[in-house]
Length: 357
Image (tube, rainbow, N blue to C red; front, top):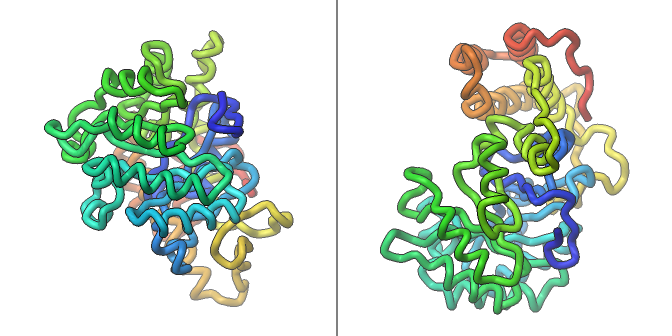
């Protein structure tokens, strides 16, 4: 399938999740197969245009992840168009607009899901962006602001008319946040009414659920978020089912190895990169190398890696036998070596990965 001129090898997409789907995680999921597109954590258009360092970090991606969509948020058409030009200059394949984030600190600034209350203004944002960039502009939205304001059908039509190349719909309202269930019947109605690809999102935790959504309606593809955090192989397994193959079985050792490789990438990501492999608005796309003599800096970096592992473990451990014990042990780990030992023991990893970079 295609989004504009961009070909996707699979209709399954890693949904953007703030604080979770960093470039290291996306690379590892991509290596498992079945992933047609990755989307970065959302980036502030204001931060991009002003060059705020913390914001620029979220634009980072590598050649291994392509095709890549960088998701931005904001409500000012001119500023969003300027931010889209920056995204295009970084070499991203697609620029995505977040109109689905229900978090108050985003929505109160006329961004994220608040745009769903003003479909005409939201369409003006897309129109301004499509005039400024050649890469496809896509939109991620929710069902609406509330049960009394289901605006996805109108908004989807308006952004298509404004030049959007695809839309993704999460079937919950902003007021629901992540409670209740995603309304896939609404998603299907939106898909049926548009001529551009429509991706559905929500409640796809098992590969069979992804397959059911693809076969049960009019969507062109499926975004998977929390399901990927629990099972990084879910897209590959869904691909097996779509192709009529037996679904691959993931061993405990493979699950443990994924975590170790993730730690290795977080620890050493950016080291010995080939020219042009890594792209970012920060430091001109070049990852600064750590000073081996900066022991305090190294210790801070290792603490950051451990905190990333703790965050992932809150999802990854769900459904595992004794997963609560694994989560507790990782939360108590104070060093990379200790975290590695915990993972190897829990999953009985026979031979640890020495480098995943």
